[in-house]
Image (cartoon, rainbow, N blue to C red; front, side, top):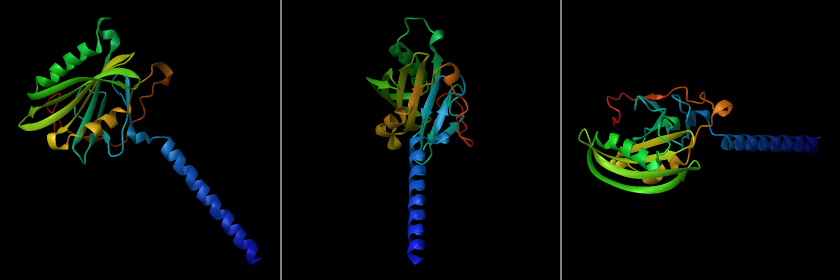
Length: 206
């Protein structure tokens, strides 16, 4: 009798272990909905956030996606412009020039390096690193323009000079993709409790 009870206990324990392993598999296979942000303005882009990042609000009034890594004081916004709003000849480089001009007009520019070409979310992209003073604070930006099929996407990531980490921002960009059109698009996947940041200009830094 004791032997039977012992065997039953082992079998139950094995089932619990297998159940926990399955839970871990599904937890890692499917990203948490609180870490997947979808463009709420035009439904054109999607960003899966790495660990530590959370949705933010009020970083930029025209951004479809906003996020912050509060521990390291890092920020990112995504502004998507529908491709149909431009002349057919518009290139990713020209779009980058226009949006970078908006940024540099709002800071005291120190340096700008680039372009660097990269494939992001299966799309051609160009990147620039920009450094300057904003309201007496030295800020470094990673300015990325992604040429999607539906839109040009400006992905602007920044932090103070001491907290800027190019590798961390490139890792963040690995989670970017253009949102498909039609039934496959989903605007409902956003965190329930975003962080609110009060801003007073298009590129306000905190």
